[in-house]
Amino acid sequence: MLAEEPAKSEDGAFQYKLATKLFAHNRLDEADTRFAAVVRVDPKNTTGDADDALLDRAQIKRKHKDWAGAVADCRDLMTRWPDSDLADDALISIGFFASSGGLEKEATSAYREYLSRWPEGEDAEYAREELKKLEEEIPN
Image (cartoon, rainbow, N blue to C red; front, side, top):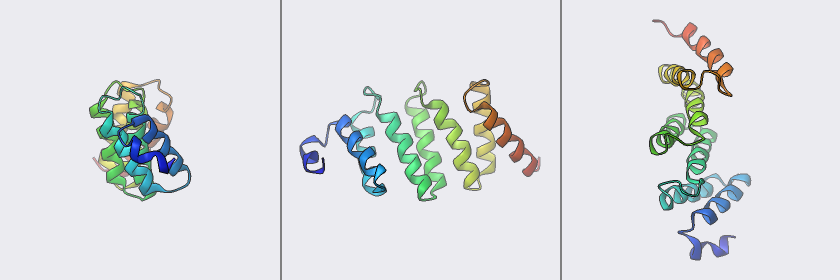
């Protein structure tokens, strides 16, 4: 696949497929470059891959313990494509990444927003549990 890349640098679907293969082989920096290319060549997410690519970029940052960067990628996804079917995943991930990075107020805000938008969502119980823990830790 890498040999085909020069001719397909503007092909978002190709870049996404290549990025996922690189990610699977733990070639994270190379995967991140390709995921970024997907977002660049498909700014309207017409393929449905760009939002996935941005969430994957957040996961790469998580693996590098770049919590603030992971939060930023998730926020970017929600800003670019607020109606994405991954918006709930992005928001719950913001809570997790922010909490992991010591950004408790941002985590609390993300979990509250998740519960406001998706009170019966797939991750609602998790959000409630994490919010309860954070509220016990953070003084008013």
